[in-house]
Structures are given as structure tokens and as C-alpha cells.
Length: 451
Image (cartoon, rainbow, N blue to C red; front, side, top):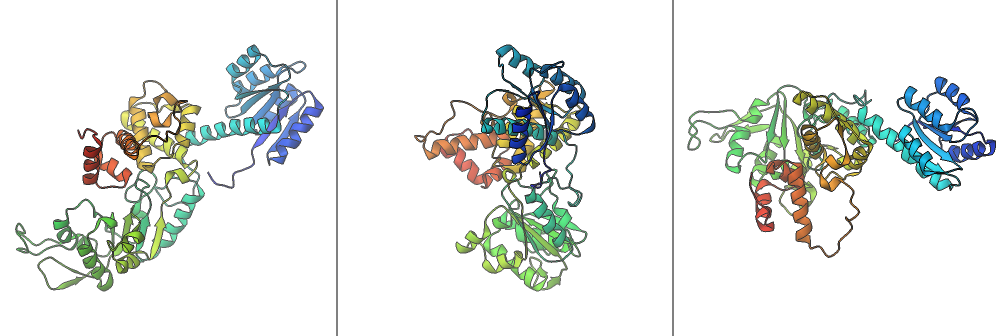
């Protein structure tokens, strides 16, 4: 969500004037908007006229008790959190309050920090729930096809809007799975296209001996099997945009030929000495850090600076805050529709676990996890035990400094493979390696390589 979040509103209900004064002062000091009521009737009257995020109520009050007030709130207000405080704590009262829907139960006396922690926890759970249920993010200024309301994504939107109005070369960077090359429900490269046609090319997915022919075309008889002349991707994209995905996988020989196209705006078909002028806007993407590759002389510095005219860096999912919840909702709806079944809801524990996970595979990993949860869900609610093991809390999971690097690497590769449902191509992308390297690691670590 935006860092400029609206101030949250709290209603404190207690028949003790000194308690109301202390709670009002303490909560207001944390920038909450605080209302007070000395009885349940006044609280109900205020709720009818004023939106409130959290009600903190005493248990024992004259006429209408806090328990009755909780029941009234739960039956009449969908998104209001409730916290019970009492000077007469008892297990039956606590159980009753929680059964009726109180988010927390705080016995008096309590410290300021205990109060603030309980309030923050209640409001955070409500915020998670609202964000997960949101049908669409409130980002009217974002380019079509993008999801996210975090400041990190708004910075991306601003860059895209500026780049889309030019013909300058664009370099899109970011970790694997952040959405550089395809729409994961939240990023669409064609938004950057200057004009049609738009031609996407996966530089890492084309064998090296075919890449030049595929990129620039070939003449009949140029090599064995060239039975006819054929235009390449650059000729096909003439007048429009070519998108070069995984540019960091390109060999140094192909880098030289691409540099010539960038410099001269001419392509030479394989088997031809005559250049063809092309008017093409180039957008490139990579999950590799190109500058270290330049330093190692595995990526040409002159090509890097030609590509790095406008740079758009997509943030990792772990830096996007509550965008995770918007994407969870988006993927849940999408996969439920595809499966022809009602969309399940997520428990607070499941949402908190998903929100807290570090997502090394970013949006692609999240998409895979949600698809599996939707398909495998037996009921209408997805809870923490339904999540992959790594996302669940365990009291036995503690740092083990006696584990070898091989053990840690093996565990991580197994987890990524599981999140990718055994798809080695996706797993390799999440791990930031190619498929051949992944196979070699599986063999060296003793992990079965069955498809």
C-alpha cells in the first residue's frame, strides 16, 4: 500500500473517565484518530455515524456489557476490529470474547507497549484482510495491465509513462520472476512498445547456432537446410518494437552483431553482404547484473551503454509490501475461474505467512503457489497448514550453524522445484541459472532428475 496511508480510527469504550483519558492520550500520541464513549449505547450511536477501524471496549459496564457490544458490532459491521480490555480477567470471559469475534483480550493493568502491540496487531490483521479481498488495486494512473500500489511500483509506473512516449532504447532489469518479460497479472512489456508490430525474442531460449539466423534472417542456400530465404525478427519488427528477453545470455559474438544493428540501424541476413535499414525500437530485459559481466568481459561495455539509455528496474516482491495481497487476490480469482469453482478465502494466519515470506522466485513463484493452493484446496478456506512447509511457522526451525553449504543448497533447490511444481525451466529461472546448470546441480546434490 502507499506509505501515505490514512490515519486509522479507534473508538475506546469504558465507563471510567480516567481510563478513557489515558487511552485517548496514549493512542493519539501514535497518530491514531481516537473517539471515546462512556457506555455501549454511546458507542453504538457513534458507530452509526462515524467509520471506525477498531473498537477497544471494557468488559464490565453498566446496562450493556462489553460482551453484548461485541455481539452487536459483529452482527452489524463487517470490517470493524474489536479488542476487549478488563480489570477482572477470567478464562471463561476471554473464551467468550474471542468466540464472539474479539481480535485480542487485554487484562488490566497493561503497559503502554502491550497496548500498542495489541492495537497494531489487530489493525494489521484487518488491513491484510481488506487488501486480500480487494477486487482491484486503486492505481488509476498506472499503465494498463499492472497491479501494485506500493511506492516501488509507482516509481516503475512513472518510468514507463516517460519511456513509452519516446523511441529511446529501454533496459528492464530485476530479479527472476519479477515480471520483466511476460504478464504475470501485473507487468506487461508491450506497454513500452512504441508502435506495432511488437516482436518478443527469448535470447536464452534459441540455440546459439540458430540465433543469428532467427534475429537477422537468412538467404536461400546460406547454410545446410536453408531451402528458402526468410526474414528475421528485426525485419519482422520493422516500424515497431523488438523485445530482447534474457539479453545477458547472448554470446559475445552475437553481442558484436547486435551492437552493429544499434549503431547503424542495419541488419545483415546470413549469407548476404548487403545491409537492410530497419526502424526498430529496442527493449531489452535481463535478470543478470550486466555491469559485473562487463567487468568480467563476458558482456561488451559498448553494448551495455547502448542498451542502458532508459533503465526500468522492477522491484522484488519482498520490497512491494501489500502488493503481495493484491496479487494473491488476483491469482486466486483467476485460477478459481479457470477451474470453474468458487474462489476460496484465506485465513488471517495464511495471509500473514504469505505476506511474511521472502519470495525468492517473486511473482512467478507466488503465481505457482496460489495455483496449487486453489487446485488442491478441499474446502472454502485456505489456512496456514495448506501452505508449503517453508512458509509455515515451526518451533523447531532455528538457525543450525552446523549445516553445510551443500545441505542448505540442496534444501533450497528442493523447495524451489516444489514451488514450480517440478517445472525445471521455471525453477532454473527462479534460481537465476540456466536449465543445464540446474541439471548438473541436481546430479551433484543427489536430487532425482525425474520430469
